[in-house]
Every structure is written in C-alpha cells, then in structure tokens.
Image (tube, rainbow over all chains, first blue to last red; front, side, top):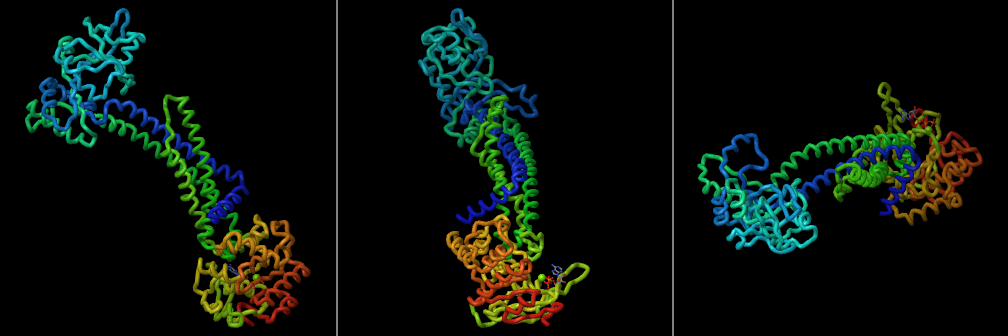
Length: 408
Length: 225
Ligand SMILES: Nc1ncnc2c1ncn2[C@@H]1O[C@H](COP(=O)(O)OP(=O)(O)OP(=O)(O)O)[C@@H](O)[C@H]1O
Ligand SMILES: [Mg+2]
C-alpha cells in the first residue's frame, strides 16, 4: 500500500514538473471520456423513454390480431385474411391452458359528449370484464365492467382519467351520463392516469361492454384478442398453444401459413434494437476514435518522458531497479494522466448530459454503467498506450542509459 | 560476507563492443583476483578499458567471454533482473559524475537502493539518514543536488553506495570532477570504509590517489599489465 502511494507520489511529481504538457495530454483523454459518457447517456435516455413507452403493452400479453404489427416483405399476402370473431375468442377462452385472462377488444375513435362539453378522438373500446385482468386496469373510483354488464349489454362505461377531467371538470363522474354517437352510457368507473404508449393516449379512452359496442357500431369488423400469460417464460408455450387452437378453429390447412398474427411487446423491442443498432455502432466508432486520440497523446507524452529521463532510468537501474519497477513507474505516470483526465471527463460528462437535456429533445440518463465506462475507458487508455513507452524504458541497458546526458 | 576469501574472481574476461562495421575490443582477456577487504586502485591510460572493467565488476554489464565469480557466485551469465538484484544487494557504485536524481533531495537519493530492496519506509528513512551521517551530511538531508557543492554531491553518492551495506564499493574516478581538497575528503571516506571492512575498487588517473590503495592494478590496452 505504501509502495502504491509512493509510486503515485512519484508519478505526480514527475508530471507536475511539466504542467503544460500534462494538461494538453489530459485534455485529449477528457474529451474522449466526455464523448463516451455523453453518448452512453443519450443511448440510456433513449432506452429508458422507449421502455417507458412500451411498458403499458405488457411484457406477458399476447395480441391475437388480423395483422402483424411489423409486416414482413409479403404484406400483400395479408389482404385476404378473414376477420377474427367470437368463434376465435371463445375457442381461446375455453381451450387455452397456458393463459390467465382473455379479453376481446374492438375500438372506434369518436367524440364523447357530456352536456355542453365534449372530447374528440376518444378511443371507445368494446371489451369484457377480463380486460381488467389483462391490463391491471383497476379504477381509482367505481368499478370496472363486470359479467352482468356484459350479459345484459348494459349501457355502462368506464372512462379514462383525461375523459373524466375534460368532461366533468373535477365533479364526480360516477353515475353521470356521457353521449357517444347519439347513445347514452352511464359512468361506473374512472381509471387512474396511465400516460401514453407510443403516442397513443391511454387516458383518452372509454370502455363499454363488447355486446353494446356491436349493437351500437355493428359487428362486421375484426376483433383483437388480448391474452395474458402467467409469466414471460411461458410466452413461447402460450404462443404455440394459441397457434394450434386458432389454426384448428379457422381450419387452416396444414400446408398453409397462419392467417392471423400473434403480436407481442418484444416485436417492438426487437424493432427498436435493430433501429438503434446503427446508433450503437456510431457510438462505438466515435468512442474508439476518441480513445485513439487520447491514447496517442498519452503515448506521445510518455515517450517524451522516457526519452528525457533516460539518465534517471540508468541511475535507478544502477542502484538495483528491476524491469517491473521501471515499468510500474512509467505506467503509473500514464495512468495518473489518464485517470485525472477520466475524472474530469466524467465531471464534464455530467455537465454535457445536463446540457443536452435542456437544449435538445433528448433526455440523456447518466448511469452507473456510463460512469464506469468512462473511467474504464480512461484507465484502459493509460495502460494500453503507456505500456509501450514504459516497456521501452524498462528494457534500457543501464550502461548506455547512464552514458546519456551528463547533468548531476 | 566472506571478508578474506576471494571476493572478485575474473578469468579471461573479454568485452567486445559490436559497432556494426567495426568491433571494439575493450577488454582482451582480463585475469584479476581481489580479496575481501582489499583496497585496489586501477590505473591506466585513457581508453585502456578501466570503465568497461568497472561496469563488469559492478554487474552493470556482462562480458563477451570469460567468467566472473562474485563472492563465489558465477554472475557472468546472469542478465536483467538477476543482475539488478546483485547490483542492489552486493554492490555500491560511485561515479565520476555523481549520477544523483536531480529532483530528489539527498535523503531520497540515498534511500533509492533501499526502495528497490523492498524495505519499508520507516527503516529506509532511518538507514538513509544513518548513511548521510556517516558521510557527515545529515544536516543537508533535504537539499537537492543543485543546492549542494560538488564534494557534497559526491558524499551523497558515497552514502547511497554504502546504504545497502554492500560487499564491495566501486568508484570510477570519484575525484575526477573535484578539486584536490574535496577529493581528499572523499578519499578519506573510502579509507574509513576500508578500515570498517569494506572491499574497495577505485579507478584513478592520479598516482597520489592510487598510492593510498593497498594494491595498484595497471590496465593497458584491455589487459592487466
Ligand atoms: N558503449 C561503447 N560502445 C563502443 N565502444 C565503447 C563503449 N564504451 C567504451 N568503448 C570503447 O572501449 C574502450 C575502453 O573504454 P573505457 O571507457 O573502458 O576506457 P577508460 O579506460 O575508462 O578510459 P578513460 O580513462 O578515458 O575513462 C575505448 O576504446 C572506448 O572507445
Ligand atoms: Mg573511464
């Protein structure tokens, strides 16, 4: 331990002997570390806002739908798909072992009115009581739709928080009536605020019994079936089981492809990953270039330091310094330079992240990993680019080294 | 240390400097025995190979051919870290040009061999100070070389040479850069060290200096004359 301190003291003294040079070299590393940290913060920020955006989709929910979320190249082959309807829903609800809840869904964007106030573009969704289980949609006031509402196709509705706020302005919406496309629905529940999913406002929704929806808006459209699986580990099993059930009920011949799609959150995650892969590559390249620039600076200063101190190395070797002593001495100098650069770079990285946050739409997040990356980066630069000059110093022959220069 | 056995035993030592186009034969077959606690002066014309010989004896360099036994151990085929270890533990070298670290004070200069011997800080400091007292420079412990006179610098160098209590002290023209009075001080130190049981080998051009040694070895053209 005291040996380490001694080494560091020695390194610092040697560096302070030439402040300007040490400062210039450090600057290279500072820029590199700041760059690496800022980029990693931006990426972490993107990752975070993306996962916040798709969180509401539910990682253990499968969506049985007519079309895939991310169509493949043969999109035209999808045109002749048949609608999904009650037959599919009932088959899944009755036969699937691997699922916890099954909710049919069919939606329409429309104006919702209460007396002289209204809200446009509200997603009115017909569903059943299982929706609550699939999404954990527990009203903060009142209750969700219940089997009785479904059975009697009651004109009851559950409203999102934005609908409640806009139409009732702080008054209690429970028991009040809203008008949708000419028909009245009684508010039986208000959902808590949920935010957006990929730009879709979860709070600007109204839920009504699916039977009431069909009666009101017709039943010629395809329904979506949201299926909750007990855990994400069981997604694969569930997908296989559902595929079997659906193929059977839709009588898909064995040699033909599925004529329906099972969508899930990970499709979006994968898409996001493939889109951001380019960003990661860019970040790696930029990081690599800064590493090189910082490293060349280090190598340069250390080569100069070794050349200038050949005589000193000779003296040290003459009194018994071994290779490892000399190697350690110069390596610790380069690590001190790059380490100081690293610390400054991390500090600047925080400032850069803060600056980007206030000046751009990005919301960078400085993570522990980002800081570790920055510091690791600087230490690596110190070691990698310090090794060559240090090894050269360590390999010097003492007689030749002593013969150089002739001071003191 | 075996003070009366053969301390330095050189047989058929040659040292050829390979300069590419030419080969310089600096030593051409040196045979030399030096006993423990001997005080030997080496003399000879410029270019005769004295420094080359001293570097070999001091394990700073290795012979092209021949054998070198130091206190019974064959060191002529050792290299790198093994030689460093021997320099550190068994040899104290005093140079004509002092060879002190300019940015370190006297104490740290004297302490240096002990650092590489892996001795703990406290003991290191104590022994370095003791060595400085020995050369009567304890009051200059915190002076850097450029704050010291030539004679004082050479005394620091002597303190550094003896701080590890080596088997032999080698000095290549230690008074060459000093006036006769300060040179006299340094020679006095060597005589003290000799009385205390050290083996001393010293290169000099001056007959008056050489006469104070127990034996004079003359080198001419790479051979013992
Ligand atoms: N590193 C070297 N490379 C090539 N030749 C060398 C080297 N060192 C010494 N020599 C040559 O070896 C011979 C002996 O040199 P050395 O330094 O041992 O002489 P010296 O007796 O110490 O001389 P002086 O009294 O001038 O110090 C000389 O011819 C010298 O030029
Ligand atoms: Mg010489």
